[in-house]
Length: 105
Image 1 (cartoon, rainbow, N blue to C red):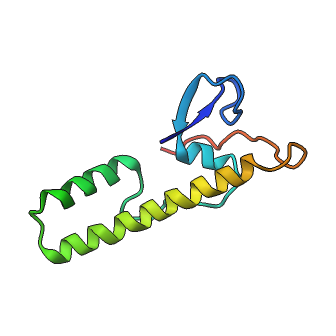
Image 2: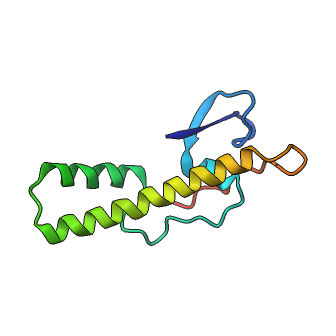
């Protein structure tokens, strides 16, 4: 899932030209939301974890561990979406658009 943005200002909803990751859009909310330290910390990891669950070849303990990690990740993503929508629904005078922080890879 992505957040639509403009080219010059990544968080501007006008002039939609590309899609950025939810994490980048959530950064525009000035939230302290983080995925750091989570067992599943991004969409690619979530997809791989889900695939391992549905294959049905894991021991129950490992299945439980992966299920818990996916629930935590999905909960964090849901919270990020709620915060983003809340921010977008603020009146223009209180909703100052900011650029997301640069990726730290």
